[in-house]
Length: 229
Ligand SMILES: Nc1ccn([C@@H]2O[C@H](COP(=O)(O)OP(=O)(O)OP(=O)(O)O)[C@@H](O)[C@H]2O)c(=O)n1
Ligand SMILES: C[C@](O)(CO)[C@H](O)COP(=O)(O)O
Image 1 (cartoon, rainbow, N blue to C red):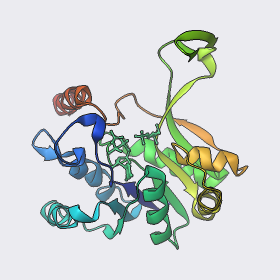
Image 2 (image 1 turned 90 degrees about the vertical axis):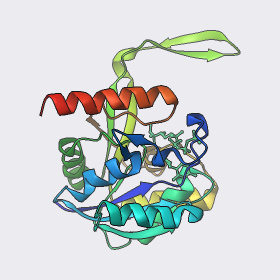
Image 3 (image 1 turned 45 degrees about the vertical axis):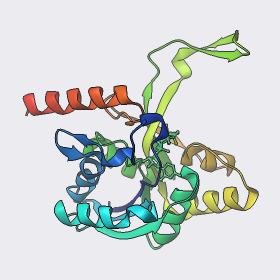
């Protein structure tokens, strides 16, 4: 059950507020990007890593790849203005894959067991996304006024990886591109293309490093993993 992973890494990290791409910020002395790449480098099911990058960061990323011996990174492609554009560019470079995983480079704590469950589900059913059950009550709010409380039992907080049979995701991504549709995850594109998408329960550790508070959380996750080794 092999796969190719597409990692969008071409963001600007605005919400993190760093002077540079948040993926170069360090957790436990190692860049976030290196943590994430190592998960896939060490996964025997992962055949190839395709990275979408900011062209001006190419040299720094090539240095990081060499430093951490990330030999499965085969292609660095220019990302786009939106995450979806970066993913699409990388997907086009991943042609030939049977199963493709799209994973935010900003999520360094993904577990191999979750990745493998996603690959198995996508192989069997077409598409599968990592998610965790909502822990908070969720309400729909318009102009500051609550409109409705949504039944929490049906709500999941969606993460990445998002795994698909390659041709299915490419069809959905191409359709969205041609129609100028912009979604916030690959699941949206698949859903609107009529492709069944299933949830695979993930870990609450699989946080996206988005704002400064997440870095504190990340350091704690690494510390806990060290202590329980
Ligand atoms: N045009 C973009 C935007 C985002 N990403 C990547 O998509 C992942 C998830 O995006 P997000 O966490 O929003 O990262 P940023 O866009 O960098 O953050 P912000 O929205 O705060 O600027 C990240 O690994 C980011 O590098 C990308 O490749 N291309
Ligand atoms: C894809 C994603 O991580 C699923 O939760 C999320 O939609 C990415 O959002 P971002 O604002 O592009 O980080």
